[in-house]
Image 1 (cartoon, rainbow, N blue to C red):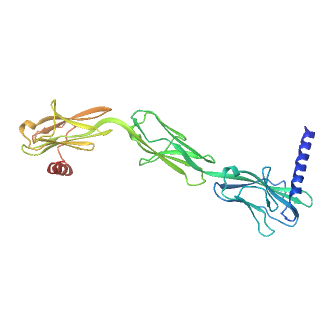
Image 2 (cartoon, rainbow, N blue to C red; image 1 turned 30 degrees about the vertical axis):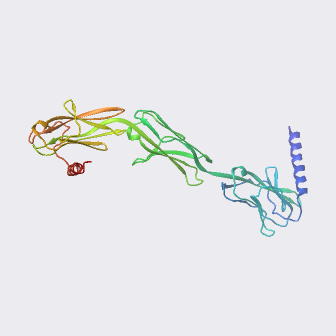
Length: 336
């Protein structure tokens, strides 16, 4: 085994001396201690790298090599790559310049030196970093409440980027997930815009977004009854939350109500208002608001009653807001 190692070392020495015989004389380079550790140069993809090698009068031949390939021998360029050239300042510098560096340029570069006594080398390892880039992210999705959801965010870069997720609600706290964000039994408060960020400190992080819509059945959160005198305008208000937006219906006992001279129904987004334009004794009583979408249905009872006969049933409110009154009157005037 020892004999084999010595034989291999001798072959390397012979090959190196053959290379130096091809290199023209008369271009000196500073001799370098072969025991020195390899230097690293880190460069970002697309930038220009300059690998330094300096001269003195003790060197007769010099060359630049990348792995086993000759790039320059003296002033003679062996490489066909137009991005590569020499940086020289008189007889003081013999540096290698690589423009628009790419990942395939990464590797070991050697400044080979022939002195009067023995060959020496200066070795540099070029490390090419690539900014983080998100190349695939989940499309916007719509799911039903309670479903399991997986969002994906795939990114490349050198070094490998770290991937983080946030739901851009008021707190925007980081979520547990990397390339894949798993949400088990998603709830309505988890709907919104999700941010995926890939970063590796090479450049500005890359950011992509996924919009998640969560469908859920209607829930009536406000049912406002009315205490109205005969001959006045009576209004009953019903408000519900739901995705998709709920549809509303009004009932008096078992009869569905529709717009007429005596009744006007307004729907303003997630709120519906039943307006009785000229209240009579027959109009007093129980009314039902029904909110529905394709996921479910919910109803609530409201009351139109005489002054002084108000009912405290938890779903009624005697007071009516000024803005609501004005909005309804405007709708009547402009027939909206």
